[in-house]
Length: 197
Image (cartoon, rainbow, N blue to C red; front, side, top):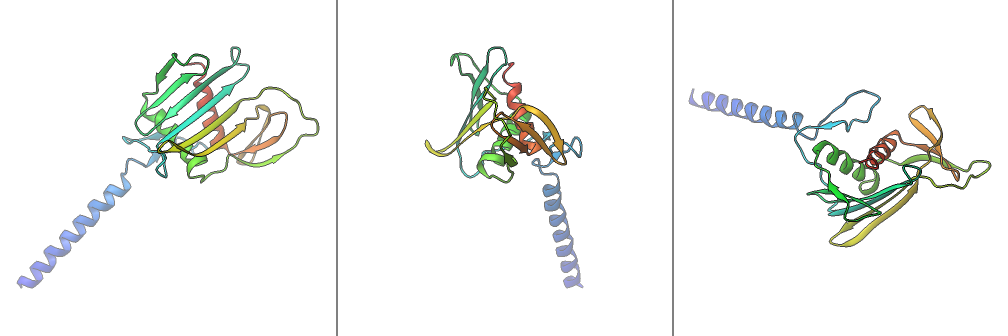
Protein backbone atom coordinates (compact mmCIF):
# COMPACT_ATOMS: atom_id res chain seq x y z
CA UNK A 1 0.00 0.00 0.00
CA UNK A 2 2.89 2.37 0.77
CA UNK A 3 4.34 1.71 -2.70
CA UNK A 4 1.04 2.60 -4.38
CA UNK A 5 0.77 5.82 -2.33
CA UNK A 6 4.37 6.70 -3.14
CA UNK A 7 3.86 6.00 -6.87
CA UNK A 8 0.62 8.01 -6.87
CA UNK A 9 2.33 10.93 -5.12
CA UNK A 10 5.23 10.75 -7.58
CA UNK A 11 2.84 10.74 -10.57
CA UNK A 12 0.92 13.73 -9.17
CA UNK A 13 4.23 15.55 -8.68
CA UNK A 14 5.28 14.80 -12.29
CA UNK A 15 1.90 15.97 -13.63
CA UNK A 16 2.11 19.15 -11.53
CA UNK A 17 5.67 19.93 -12.70
CA UNK A 18 4.88 19.22 -16.37
CA UNK A 19 1.76 21.42 -16.22
CA UNK A 20 3.77 24.20 -14.60
CA UNK A 21 6.54 23.97 -17.22
CA UNK A 22 4.00 23.81 -20.05
CA UNK A 23 2.23 26.86 -18.61
CA UNK A 24 5.55 28.77 -18.63
CA UNK A 25 6.09 27.87 -22.28
CA UNK A 26 2.65 28.94 -23.46
CA UNK A 27 2.63 32.14 -21.44
CA UNK A 28 6.13 33.08 -22.49
CA UNK A 29 6.59 36.83 -22.76
CA UNK A 30 8.09 36.28 -26.22
CA UNK A 31 4.66 35.34 -27.54
CA UNK A 32 3.28 38.27 -29.48
CA UNK A 33 -0.33 39.16 -29.86
CA UNK A 34 -1.50 39.34 -33.43
CA UNK A 35 -3.52 42.47 -34.15
CA UNK A 36 -4.81 41.31 -37.52
CA UNK A 37 -4.12 38.15 -39.50
CA UNK A 38 -2.82 40.29 -42.38
CA UNK A 39 -0.58 42.38 -40.10
CA UNK A 40 2.96 41.56 -39.02
CA UNK A 41 2.78 39.61 -35.75
CA UNK A 42 5.37 41.86 -34.07
CA UNK A 43 2.53 44.20 -33.07
CA UNK A 44 3.06 43.91 -29.32
CA UNK A 45 5.42 42.04 -27.07
CA UNK A 46 4.40 41.40 -23.49
CA UNK A 47 6.74 42.26 -20.63
CA UNK A 48 10.00 41.31 -22.26
CA UNK A 49 13.07 42.71 -23.90
CA UNK A 50 14.09 41.38 -27.30
CA UNK A 51 17.87 41.08 -27.65
CA UNK A 52 20.15 41.28 -30.65
CA UNK A 53 20.80 37.76 -31.97
CA UNK A 54 24.03 35.84 -32.58
CA UNK A 55 26.04 37.72 -29.94
CA UNK A 56 25.88 40.96 -31.93
CA UNK A 57 26.36 43.68 -29.32
CA UNK A 58 25.83 46.82 -31.41
CA UNK A 59 23.98 47.76 -34.59
CA UNK A 60 24.09 51.13 -36.30
CA UNK A 61 21.27 52.03 -38.70
CA UNK A 62 21.80 55.08 -40.89
CA UNK A 63 18.60 56.11 -42.65
CA UNK A 64 17.98 58.98 -45.06
CA UNK A 65 14.54 60.01 -46.24
CA UNK A 66 14.86 62.60 -49.01
CA UNK A 67 12.13 65.09 -49.75
CA UNK A 68 10.98 65.25 -46.12
CA UNK A 69 11.51 68.84 -45.01
CA UNK A 70 14.73 69.18 -47.00
CA UNK A 71 15.83 65.64 -46.25
CA UNK A 72 15.60 63.93 -42.91
CA UNK A 73 18.25 61.51 -41.82
CA UNK A 74 19.27 59.92 -38.55
CA UNK A 75 21.38 57.19 -37.03
CA UNK A 76 20.09 54.64 -34.56
CA UNK A 77 22.71 53.25 -32.19
CA UNK A 78 21.23 49.97 -31.00
CA UNK A 79 22.51 47.80 -28.17
CA UNK A 80 20.78 45.36 -25.86
CA UNK A 81 20.49 48.09 -23.23
CA UNK A 82 19.41 51.16 -25.25
CA UNK A 83 18.54 52.70 -28.59
CA UNK A 84 19.82 56.20 -29.27
CA UNK A 85 18.37 58.23 -32.17
CA UNK A 86 20.87 60.84 -33.42
CA UNK A 87 20.14 63.52 -36.03
CA UNK A 88 22.74 63.07 -38.79
CA UNK A 89 22.95 66.85 -39.35
CA UNK A 90 23.62 67.63 -35.68
CA UNK A 91 25.03 64.90 -33.44
CA UNK A 92 24.17 66.98 -30.37
CA UNK A 93 20.50 66.56 -31.25
CA UNK A 94 19.50 63.10 -30.04
CA UNK A 95 17.07 61.21 -27.85
CA UNK A 96 16.74 57.71 -26.46
CA UNK A 97 13.86 55.51 -27.53
CA UNK A 98 12.21 54.57 -24.26
CA UNK A 99 9.05 52.74 -25.39
CA UNK A 100 9.66 49.00 -24.91
CA UNK A 101 7.32 48.04 -27.77
CA UNK A 102 9.18 50.31 -30.21
CA UNK A 103 12.56 49.02 -29.03
CA UNK A 104 11.40 45.43 -29.39
CA UNK A 105 10.05 46.05 -32.88
CA UNK A 106 13.32 47.61 -34.03
CA UNK A 107 15.45 44.78 -32.66
CA UNK A 108 13.00 42.16 -33.96
CA UNK A 109 13.25 43.56 -37.49
CA UNK A 110 17.05 43.89 -37.28
CA UNK A 111 17.28 40.23 -36.23
CA UNK A 112 14.80 39.15 -38.91
CA UNK A 113 16.40 40.89 -41.93
CA UNK A 114 20.03 41.55 -41.03
CA UNK A 115 21.33 39.22 -38.32
CA UNK A 116 19.46 35.92 -38.52
CA UNK A 117 18.20 36.64 -42.05
CA UNK A 118 15.11 34.47 -41.59
CA UNK A 119 13.15 36.79 -43.89
CA UNK A 120 14.08 38.36 -47.22
CA UNK A 121 13.89 42.12 -47.68
CA UNK A 122 12.54 41.66 -51.18
CA UNK A 123 11.57 38.63 -53.23
CA UNK A 124 12.41 39.88 -56.70
CA UNK A 125 14.21 42.79 -58.35
CA UNK A 126 13.86 43.74 -62.01
CA UNK A 127 15.00 46.73 -64.05
CA UNK A 128 12.38 49.16 -65.36
CA UNK A 129 12.41 50.09 -69.05
CA UNK A 130 13.64 53.65 -68.49
CA UNK A 131 15.59 54.39 -65.30
CA UNK A 132 14.73 57.67 -63.58
CA UNK A 133 17.65 59.03 -61.57
CA UNK A 134 16.63 60.77 -58.35
CA UNK A 135 17.10 60.51 -54.60
CA UNK A 136 15.26 57.72 -52.86
CA UNK A 137 15.22 56.67 -49.20
CA UNK A 138 18.36 54.84 -48.20
CA UNK A 139 19.12 52.53 -45.27
CA UNK A 140 22.56 51.28 -44.19
CA UNK A 141 22.76 48.71 -41.38
CA UNK A 142 26.06 47.71 -39.73
CA UNK A 143 26.43 45.08 -37.03
CA UNK A 144 29.31 44.75 -34.56
CA UNK A 145 30.59 42.13 -32.16
CA UNK A 146 33.25 43.28 -29.69
CA UNK A 147 33.84 46.43 -31.83
CA UNK A 148 34.55 44.34 -34.96
CA UNK A 149 32.22 44.93 -37.91
CA UNK A 150 30.46 41.65 -38.72
CA UNK A 151 28.10 42.82 -41.47
CA UNK A 152 27.08 45.86 -43.49
CA UNK A 153 24.16 46.14 -45.87
CA UNK A 154 22.90 49.08 -47.94
CA UNK A 155 19.57 49.35 -49.70
CA UNK A 156 17.79 52.08 -51.67
CA UNK A 157 14.09 51.90 -50.99
CA UNK A 158 11.59 52.13 -53.82
CA UNK A 159 8.74 54.54 -53.15
CA UNK A 160 7.14 54.98 -56.58
CA UNK A 161 4.29 53.21 -58.35
CA UNK A 162 3.09 51.25 -55.30
CA UNK A 163 1.11 48.12 -56.05
CA UNK A 164 0.21 44.99 -54.13
CA UNK A 165 0.42 41.50 -55.57
CA UNK A 166 -0.54 38.66 -53.24
CA UNK A 167 1.65 38.95 -50.16
CA UNK A 168 4.17 41.31 -51.77
CA UNK A 169 4.34 45.08 -52.10
CA UNK A 170 5.75 46.34 -55.39
CA UNK A 171 7.65 49.64 -55.41
CA UNK A 172 10.11 51.28 -57.80
CA UNK A 173 13.11 53.43 -57.03
CA UNK A 174 14.00 54.60 -60.54
CA UNK A 175 16.71 51.98 -60.94
CA UNK A 176 14.79 48.84 -60.03
CA UNK A 177 11.32 47.47 -59.48
CA UNK A 178 11.22 45.58 -56.17
CA UNK A 179 8.73 43.03 -54.91
CA UNK A 180 9.13 43.67 -51.17
CA UNK A 181 8.34 41.53 -48.18
CA UNK A 182 5.48 43.38 -46.40
CA UNK A 183 7.30 42.91 -43.08
CA UNK A 184 10.23 44.90 -44.43
CA UNK A 185 7.86 47.69 -45.49
CA UNK A 186 6.58 47.77 -41.87
CA UNK A 187 10.21 48.17 -40.71
CA UNK A 188 10.77 50.92 -43.31
CA UNK A 189 7.62 52.75 -42.17
CA UNK A 190 8.72 52.46 -38.54
CA UNK A 191 12.09 54.03 -39.42
CA UNK A 192 10.40 56.72 -41.51
CA UNK A 193 8.28 57.69 -38.49
CA UNK A 194 11.48 58.76 -36.68
CA UNK A 195 12.18 61.51 -39.23
CA UNK A 196 9.44 63.72 -37.83
CA UNK A 197 10.51 63.21 -34.20
